[in-house]
Length: 407
Image 1 (spheres, rainbow, N blue to C red):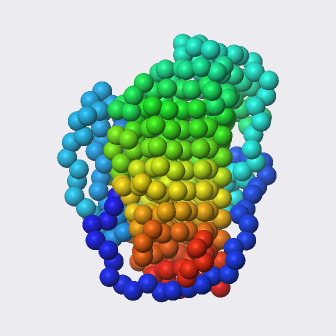
Image 2: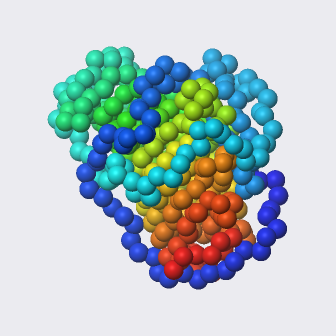
């Protein structure tokens, strides 16, 4: 959400060294969660209905405006938004854990579609194939338009994932930007979505209580709210090499490119009132432009993921003030390139006590339209976020930040 006024503090100026290359990994890992970590929220899948979460981005003052929990059957009745909230306490605030790059984050190796076991060419055939899918199923989409709201509710295995593959000419069309998820992974594991186009829905691809899955090489465009959303304790997933553009057409401030987790106001709905622990996810190599809100939004309640090597263009962004906003813990943000950030480049926010902490920022290149910070860290004295000196401005001008960089 665009901030209502600018910060008065004078930013520090730094000139970084030349950044290194972004990290690129090998095969996808899908490890069990460690001791003391909440189990995957299969039970949350029942509550992750096709209602609209629509949680907003935070302003640069780390204030949160709750998105209404809209019913898609009445998409135009948005209700009253709650007023801003200051940083607050939550009884399930996390304790310190492993640092960025925790074991179990997918390593980012692209997947390859196997020979199809089933070919489809109509919307009815597609939904029937999704319903019948099981370990080892490989669904091939013929070029053409598939209009509807498609749902997958069966799981593959680590050795036999389920593939849904198509060329960009295979277009899943939600039928309108005011309601519906074009493609919904609901309480599943080990899916691979590869290559096709998703467009013209309120939300593009939504994963609820989904783990060890890959969203790769899709074109997600012309979307009412956010393009790709990992939610309801969706863990160990990889969002790789997608093209995301023209989001927020229904409400600009709901138009994130990639959205991980849920706003605290929606925890009762999507995670039983506890933090939405959509942990250890990878967002890598995506090309994100023309979004109404942040290119990438990482919510409070999430831990240990990575945002690596994405290219973002904030031109025309009207519903947010930064390209990346990290409110979770122990995320690694590395090797990203951002252009035309509207007010600030990359931000952290401490929405709740214990969150927005211990994140690491390295080798990012950011340009800001205006005189705002390239990096802004909220509550730096208590959050232990680290901004390294290998971050830089693409224009060669000194980097502006409210914190000293780490050599």
